[in-house]
Length: 290
Image (cartoon, rainbow, N blue to C red; front, side):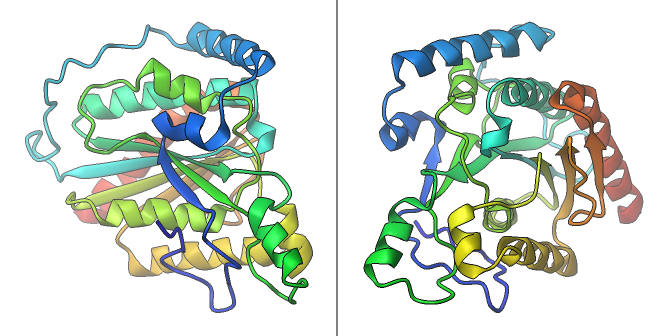
């Protein structure tokens, strides 16, 4: 499946999308291979840290349908949480982000929202197969994006129960998963999935700890290449007005990209901040609808 953005910048190109992957969390072993003994030990430690900061154990979904927004007397709302899984998020930051996401999913599902949880990274460091192909073709100038996107679905918007599964969280915490981050295409992907949903109100919340980075792409196209594309994608989404978008910067100010945003000092502050930020976004959306 092609992961080309829905809102590409006029000069944004992808050298090849042949190696891009969009997968469910259950498929990560097939994409990344089995964990080494050392990585399995690191994962067990990260999951224990995640469990330690979660107020209640993970629930077992019962299959009982929760009320929709319409049944609660308001518009149907779909919310997507999009998690930056770049290398700097490995370990404790990812465990704390996972705990914050689980709590947000519980709260939002209890109010009837449909909630999707997505992650984005790359399959390899240093460009992987696209960069090898580019070099084999004698390095043409300005090749465009030179890496293998890996987009992961941790929770589908149509899932019933209030919790994500423990297995999906373990996949999110894999120490071999975080690598590079191509934010523009990830935001376009998440937005495209939201637009395909039947709900009339749509919100996208991005959780990120830095600017778009892929060394292979930036070395071949210039340091601002991915940043400019993210700006273009966000401008298109805001101009079309079908999705409310905001972001939380983890130890990083994301206000230059996302006018609706907050920054937290570390992932340890993310839990209550994410819940309060979503409340604020929904309040703004309700005021605008009146």
